[in-house]
Image (cartoon, rainbow over all chains, first blue to last red; front, side, top):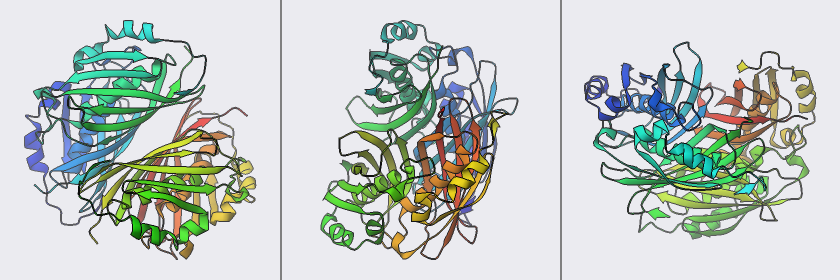
Length: 139
Length: 139
Length: 139
Length: 139
């Protein structure tokens, strides 16, 4: 991470919010690590995540990467809004897999932030890579 | 849509599969229109879609756009795999909103396909725009 | 275009600057149309644009799309900085082709802008589609 | 790099082609390192690269990243076509700067390849990050 040197630390606040976050409960996503500019979120894939081709729906992998993105970017600037997200889906996943998404903030500036995300499975295999743009919003 | 002139029509097959698609039932996404190279999918937003900032989670909007992408691209080449997806999140959404995602295939070639997606709300307001890359897979 | 209703009009200023823009002269790009939220730029492809595979270098198509993006986004908010750009290269081009890039601003907000670009050749064939993010900068 | 284990090595062939590549001469881009799945290309910025805002044109940074992308992806699969490219422009650059673009292939598969690029300046400062999709083409 480079950019704002003296950014406030929103980690404790986000950890507290994560415990009662509706979408996290609904999708089964768990925030397992959070530090300024870094987050790790996990999710267990289930049969209800399958699509019409009998594979895990790509949108579920996107959602998991986006959740890591949200925690990582907001850990340096709260609140931040995601305005853009690009993902490369590299390998498939199956029900029973435990996916891990990690976010590393590349730059957290006054007007814009950039983050990188990776998604891997329980064997460490690369499932997806993503990048995204955030806009810090004065609350 | 431009590209393969004599592509088979997979519309009937996809409509049939959509009725028992696990992720569609889980997320509450409905395929409401499908023709070769075009799809329309709707989703009602609920309180469980809220994130830690009290807004609808961007990953839910991504998932809806990805579902339209999947039906649109597979309507011309079944099965097709999404390998890349880029989204611009333009306006927020709230529980109670009914979102509509539409996909238009820009090119469906022998080796690669490109699609465009829009997401709007019940008032016709633009919520997001996305594009994506698919790879046709010989079954 | 949606967003700022009463944005100032920077068209005349940009047209004036375009006449002495170094990169436009160097790459042979011509601004042929500009109105608030819309731009059109053309470029004639030459043998020096060929890459090691004997095809026109994709980076040249990107540069042309980026030039339309710059004029379109700055026509509503001057100066604006591009922070993200995604392009799909759809068909090839050859020396002698005259490419046209058009930009339409989708949203020009106080904190972020989104634009769409298309690149076509002299026969109207679609060569590329792109989208991008800009940040308005108070001067 | 992961994917094809026994990919042929196209490094010598590409190095030879690079010496007479028209776009490389025209833009002043130099291939300075190439191994299977990795490339490094440099470029000296000049006054003719300035845009109408008095800054180095983003399209020039894109072109340099795209050149590294082309060599990196083709080093594992020759010829490969770029079909998609996404870039985040992180910091500005000025005439006199010497930019370095590096490409690392993340996956080189039978149907699709994914690469990551970084652009830095002579001080090692991060100027841009990009990712892209390639399609291997049987020659």
